[in-house]
Amino acid sequence: MAGSVVAAVLLSPWWWTAAGVLTAVLVLAVWDLLQRKHSVLRNYPVLGHLRFLLEDVRPELQQYFIERNFDGRPFDRDTRSIVYERAKGTAAEEPFGTERDLYQPGSEYLVPSMVPRPVPEDAPRVRIGGAKCTQPYDMALLNVSAMSFGALSSNALLALNTGAALGGFAHDTGEGGLSEYHLRPGGDLIWEIGTGYFGCRTEDGGFDEKLFAEKAAHEQVKCVSLKLSQGAKPGIGGVLPGPKVTAEIAKVRGVPQGQTVTSPPYHRVFSTPRELVRFLDRMRELAGGKPVGFKLCVGSRREFLAVCKAMLAEDVTPDFIVVDGAEGGTGAAPLEFADNVGLPLTEGLITVHNALVGAGLRDRIKIGASGKVATGSDLVKRLLQGADYTNAARAMMFAVGCIQAQRCHTNTCPVGVATQDPKLAHALDVGDKSHRVQRFQEATVKSALQLMASMGVTDRSELAPHMLLHRIDPHTVRSYAELHEWLTPGQLLKDAPQSWQRDWDAADPDRFAG
Image (cartoon, rainbow, N blue to C red; front, top):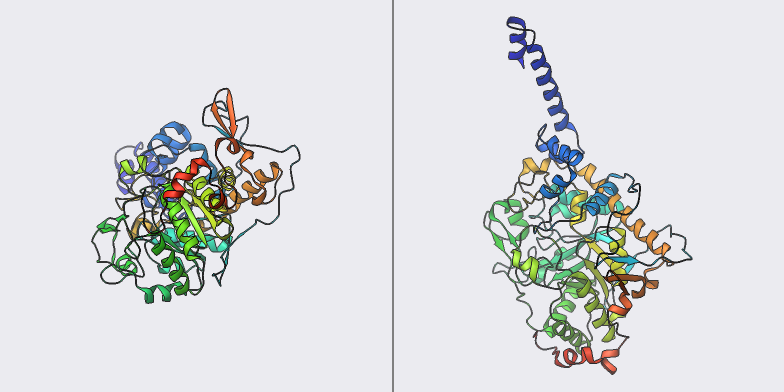
């Protein structure tokens, strides 16, 4: 810029134009670095505006290059726009009518009532805790799903947990251990324990009861969740690349610094359904009576029925079960697993709900649902399909600024969400993004309650499968009550329907067998 001024004085007045442009660019760069709303501009001043230019001028190009799912499949642009608008606190209404094809096979519709109900002023909560739970927890209808320290940056976790504290909902830690960034803001936590037992791990990779009990006693830890499998990659363990294993992460997880961390695909502490149930009971005892449950991506119905039989035989039940759909996202997973293994959330959720109902266990166990839950309609659909509450991961990442750049595994996330590079992570402003998280959750739950009221119900217990319609073809629509078989309480114990009889008879509480 100084050179342009000199050239303007000595050579030609046209150089004043260049000086003016350079000055404007410098001012813009300083502004980008100082503002707190856009992480991408803080990390890439001036150049980062190209991202917003794409958004304004060619939204279809932005969707292709930016709005891609972690496993390469498109994530609905309208859904993402809803998340962003709610996180920012802007109106979600749009002019004109729907732009989706209502006659497209696979389309689904909630059934409105001719007599809508008033929308409740206060969002309902779900009591988690059975007979053996001495410290029950009241869960919100929408919570932060599992995302680990290591996969996400410290600032991203601080924003998520601060948002949870502001909004009064729960934050699942993911399997990467219990870090100060989960604990510092004071938000309610669901501590997830995976096959690597990070945070309560012995030197040889086993489960450390003493360490687990010490950490489970934290006031912020409200529930403990044992992860059996994950929707995006069921049947294999998680992977944290070595460059992301900093000294801090290594300490939290109890692993060597700088080395790639691969969780085993299976647990060492149990090998049969009966042993699983007993271990859950032991975890609840070690946790001082706090709610304990497990998370899985459903595969074999027979295996899950074997767990139900083990619960009946031992008279031990978890306080909750989280069903993770195969459509769930992750920072890194083999494409074959992401696309071809495990049941989608709808089928998995209905399977678990019916199995528990048929075994006479449903009233003792609450069900959570996770897997592309992002809007109020998503939430209502999952409640209709058998869930008591929901968890969201990807939508919460959008709320803290994720633009789906698909660099999660490279440690170069441009907005500081999925990176351990302190320079990149610093761009994520915790104060701004935590309020976005809180606003998104509040607005989404409010939307769900508005939808329920339009359907003539005010409580989730009033929702029923006939209230959700599914289009089979351009001329045929069926309700979920017609499309799926719904068991009655204890039906498997008395007179199992033919469609369930073979799996129920073959289910063995002393072995897992698909």
